[in-house]
Image (cartoon, one colour):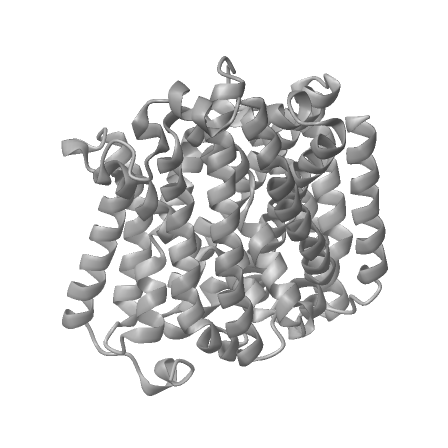
Length: 459
């Protein structure tokens, strides 16, 4: 029953995507939906992109282990969305396709290239996370072997993204965002009932698990800070801002996503925390939401919850795949290989790059378990782009050389600090931001100021 329902749901998404894909006429349609999305669609796609396997598996697994304080992992991301709401209009005004494009215009081409390579590495790895999460669902509901499950998940995400593009992804994300909200809203009371009520939950769990701060404020900040940096620079979120109809629309869309995300993050952490009472012996706490849906909730509610799980996996997977592909085409191919390429060729090559990156993500996650360490590096390196992006819009004195040094230092510091074993217990994300920000400031004051042409697009 569960597998059949999931397949029906996926085929429904394919049908909607195929219908909308008929409107894709060029690379701009494919990557930024002709910059014509209404606010409610943009809000839905921001919410669905945010709530990926990192929340469904990562944050839920942390809540299963430590309780409500796991919310700080996603609160950092929500604060980043709040920060983006203040500059959304300026981002939309730029009319770009990628975040490295912004860095290239504000600083220089080497900065753009380095940033593009970092984002490609990070977001291909995130696609791998979604593929593994999809395999979790298939194994739990249908006993599908992990390797086979990853191939099935990858095939769907790759195939859907190849023909769909941003237009189809955005509108189906709206459907998936509604599915996620309904599933968690309806499912939570049943999980509380299965635990024996809130009094039983309070009696079964240590008090710190029901506290938002958990064991310490420092621990909360350790998960909040890197998530803030990552989400603030997360290119798929910026591309949804690029895709909005106008500046007013994008400000409304980004702002409207905040209350929806607060609700989802809170109820997800709450459900996973109670899941530790209902299912106390899970080998992998990251599967708690999926396990509750399959084994605890009434079948009809469980089906909705599992479809929601599939929704967040597919949504984030296709968003990251589309994003990384845009970097290869827009920031590398069109800049260094064939600047005068025809639109038909650009669209064809974009789809082929989607295929290649999807296969690469599958190979990484299936055959190289150590790629998980690389994922952490990539997350932190991408988050390290935050100082350069903030300076691009808000600090006129930031110089081209400083921008390049800042972006390069994000990668170098991440690898070096991790290799040193995080001396003094300082988290890599803190050190990466500290070093890249310090170098940005110091180098800016000892190198020539940017030209008026470099600043003109950011006024």
